[in-house]
Length: 72
Length: 377
Image 1 (spheres, each protein chain N blue to C red):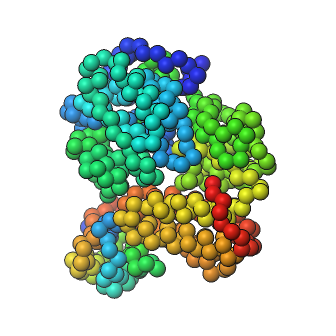
Image 2 (cartoon, each protein chain N blue to C red):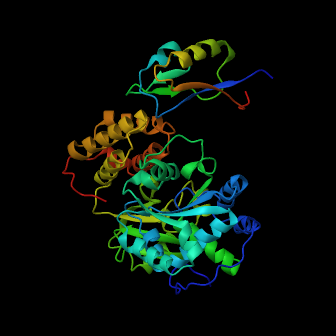
Image 3 (cartoon, chains in turn orange, yellow):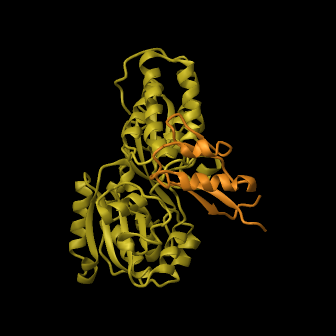
């Protein structure tokens, strides 16, 4: 079984800068106040590099990519 | 029959309890009475597994829900029973400290608890400290209580870590509502928990207040026992401000019991049953409660802070200026979007309350005409 990841956001840290949604619009959109709404479930394999980029580039380090046990 | 209220609150030696007492709790299927209805045995086991004689028991009497009075009445009438529950928890979970976390404005309840404590044994008294819970809606939530006890700030934190993993002073911690602890005490004493719940009847009711009812009692019977409604209710709010509105004819036959509530997609929550009289405007009532809940956001998470304020604003616009389809559509969408997007469940509770308003009062929201907002719940 390949490794599976899901995106999480620390809601207290998140400042609504919105970078994540620009880097990964496939899985992240912004609400009316600029805070991210994450697509639920496992991050598709081909999007993992972009998701990693979103994690690394978040100015307040609020986004994380976590190993998951969700079944595909 | 064993009951919580209406029985003399005497000080007796604690019944012997061991680690197998958690099995007895499990068999009793006791669930937390603070609002979340979490199974008590599971919570105790999690603390027991991690305690090395250093666990902490937080006796949760914050009772921040505006309409709720049942925890205060219980602490005032049966302080020894609540303390018994706390010391039983301390023994079973090998705790070193017991913290009485009582709402800062609940003077009568706190004094009753302190009086009862003053005649307990020296070792018991030495375990106890008292803390005044800030009068904020979120202050009664577990994570907020622990944050306050550790750092003096009653705002929720991210979980995990859960209180049983890292609570007060980093130690495994049990945060338990006072009514739940009273049930635990009676279970240890009599071998059974009373099949009763404490509810607070509020709103358009002749004699509002706290009632202890058998779990099979329906809302209609409970209302009659308090002298009946002041006038025909338009809807009934079950479970306080995080609860759901229900049409009276449906609510009347509902049993005040967690499992039957769940079967109807409802929850007893903190046990508040509020009657909205037909003469009151449901839209204005909803707007007032949403305004309150938005103001009680701890302003840590954007979706809660901005989202609840936007929801309250839209609701207020309809209340003050009359219905408009744009705000109605936006409210429907926001009420879904803000859910699960806070560190705590505050946005979820407020959004679900609003969704039930929009559903039960769909007619009123769609055809509301401007009138002054001045009535409150």
